[in-house]
Image (cartoon, rainbow, N blue to C red; front, side, top):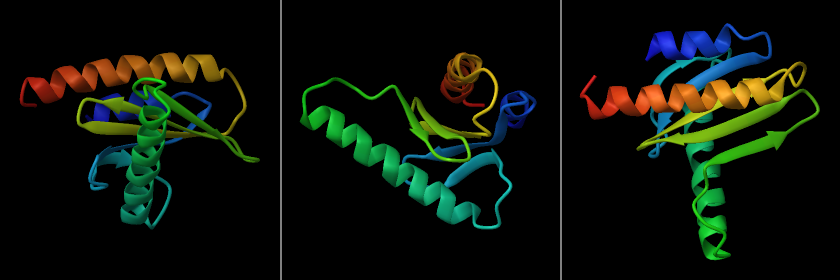
Length: 116
């Protein structure tokens, strides 16, 4: 898992990459924050709320979330029972970040279903 996250943070645009359970506990991560547990819990709560919202308005299952801020983006994507969270600087190719996140989620799904 660390290798998959490391490949994401090797992208110029990516600052942090963490993997959390839907319960908010961090499974693995490369995070430049001292409040890792808070970030994990808040990320899972935000993703859960957005997922509930999209289901409530009958717009289908949430697959990818992008939150734009003044400093960059926060992107979240489901990887089975886990959530991949990536923060970016907002500069560079955001499409590439999304593509690499999709690849990473597919690899993480394989890893989780094979029992690590």
